[in-house]
Amino acid sequence: MYDLAIIGGGPAGYVAAENAGAKGLKVVLFEKKELGGVCLNEGCIPTKTLLYSAKMYDHAQGGKKYGITAENVAYDFKKIADRKTKVVRKLVAGIKMKMEHNNVEVVRSDAYIKEGDTQSILITSGDNEYRAKNLLVCTGSEAFIPPIPGVQDNDAILTNREILSLTTAPESLVIIGGGVIGMEFASFYNSLGIEVTVIEMLPEILGGLDKEISEMLRAIYAKRGVKFNLSCKVTAIDAHTVHYTDAEGNAHSVEGDKILMSVGRRPVLKGFGLENIAVEIERGIKVNSRMQTSMPNVYAAGDVTGFSLLAHTASREGEVAVNNILGTEDHMEYNAIPGIVYTNPEVSSVGLTEEQAQAQGIEYSISKLPMTYAGRFVAENEGVTGLCKILVSSDDKVLGAHLLGNTSSEFICAVCMAITNGLSVQDIRRTVFPHPTACEIIKEGMFEL
Image (tube, one colour):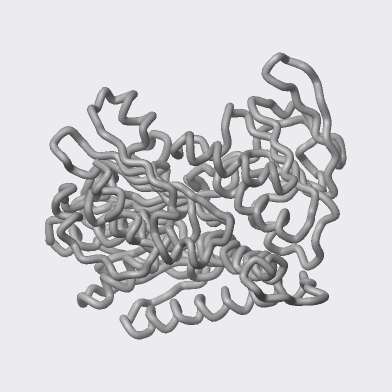
């Protein structure tokens, strides 16, 4: 009898397994592909590795602004792709070592929930049976493919998985969906000089993020040559041609060597016997703040809950589930979940946006400063302005922050901590920030309120 069985070895599953094993629980982890899940193998890590190569290429080409001249600057797409694979393999190996170190039994095969009640869950994998007191479901999400005519059996159409397997750069790329995934691939291929077109159904890219920041990022990439078609609906795909209508209903089309489908993801709820236990389903597996389902000994974490499809959210949810299994009271809060868009420049966001605060009727004051108020940002970003927006409540507590500027992904955690711990403007003003750093913009912003 295992104390805990985990289905899915992504950020929720492997973090939960590591924590549970470290605290003495007997754990079995099922993963039919590679440890690390979509994030490590088909998402976060490989895309950021590619984007860093693109950023290096951008720096090399723009070196004259910093007094550095380089001749015959070129990129080798295959070497970029090979390095991406090397980085992924290294990190997957690291997770395997963590599992071994914490005595987690890893089963590299499909798992199927055969039956279960409040006392135990029976899982089969191949010819073997595994019974556990508790179950944690971390089956993740998959790319959503809308029922657009011409999508099926079209070799030109890629999801985030297939586009990461390319070993040669496409001649042109049409991206359906201007969300985070779409914009990161737009950034990468635009930096390499590939013609990129983005088709987005909403009036603005990066829906859900701060509107002003999104508009600024789109303007930057439009100036670099990315073509944006907003408020447009794709109606059909014919081989390499994407047909779409604009807001007025006028028909248009655009051709691309490759077509990236990035219109969202959906929880993986089928294929592992979830229907054989009495858990409630809404947009994903329904859980409470303890990550507990309608069955008290069954928990769910990560994308499968359908709530926050982010790796760092998944990891924290896995921690919360394990703590509650161990009898340590813990609960999940979602008011300080950071979101990053790893374009060049980066977008970093946490907490409420202005639009959300207004919709909820929350009174707030706002500080807006160009990133150039931070000396180090000026030293390292020639000819770039950026923006830092901070929202504060009527009682001077930090509600949110939204930044456009490189390295912001490395210090947005300061605002996450402020929101999580209910820090006030005065608390942050009294904090000593290192100088010169880009993160000083957070403190500067507090003196504007």
